[in-house]
Amino acid sequence: SRSLVSHVLGGLCHAINLSLVLTRPLLSTMAAAFVLEPLLPAPSLNSLEPSSRSEPPAKRRAPCAASTVVTKSMDTQFESKSRNVIIHTGNVRRCNHQAISSPSTRDEIVTALKCTLHCWRNDHADTPLLDNELIGHPKLMDRIDPDTRHDKQITAKLFVTGEYSEGFVTDSLRSVLKTLAIDRLDAFIVQLRTPNPEDDGLGDDFVSMWQELETKQDLATALGVVDFSAEQLDQMSAAGLTPPHIDQLEASKCRTIPSVLRKMAKERQMKLLSHQDHGAPLEAEDFEYVMNKILEGQEAFTPLSTPSNSPPNSPESAGRGLAVSWRPLWVLRYNVIDTTRSIVDNLGYIICGHFDPKGV
Image (cartoon, rainbow, N blue to C red; front, top):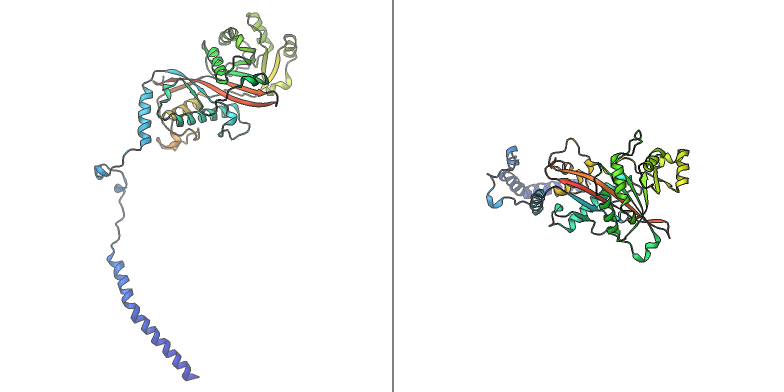
């Protein structure tokens, strides 16, 4: 047995020596290859910076087509004079961007504005925005079928976001009637900028607005006001103004409606309805931000808030660098209720804004 073990060990030693002899040339070749291949020098910080001198003209990167189009479009747009632009969002019930089932009025309007401009720009890539005084969503402009008009209850509410100017009522009424392809609304409600709870007066702006509305009574069956007290309603009568058919009250105040207002509504056959439109429907800074992003050719659906550490030309800061003034003048919301099914069949917004290329 010892001789057998010795024989086996001897065979193993011979095999190991033979493998070392055969693999030594291969290891030498591999080592030579690693030694002969030079290591690339580490790039310096200067070499990472773009330089037009070090790069041959033939190899320079051409500007992308998108940036060229945007620059040309912006130059054309800024040659335009100040003007008003009316934007129709169409039926936001069919908008895929309205992810929240019950958004606030402000969030719903901002999202609808973004969606409209985003889709309109995709369909009008070669048309500067400011060449159009009327912009409509290309896919959501639902109209009322004349055969089913008697089954629809259509209400429109006009929010005046700043100082009132003559023509706001007329322009908004014509816009909604044309959008829905109808000749008359069932109700038209008007609201000036966020009312001051301590101010019980009517104000010159409201009187001017209501007097203009009185000349358009053939376009709406019922006229309405928002958050009016009994004292303000009496002031309307004293001023010789047509009494409203509707008084919309904030939902939180409907639980404690003053008895004098209840009595007045019953005597005048005026409806007391509720609303949940808190604050301004569209803030000026939100409107200006979204519109300037579109002028710059940026994506509309990015956060409205800009981080303080964002670079000036980053997507997060887009729309903030233009010296352009956008002001929302009025916002109109319309509701189309299908009375046979008791559902909101169509809900949309019409936004009128003013553009000033000088930013003043």
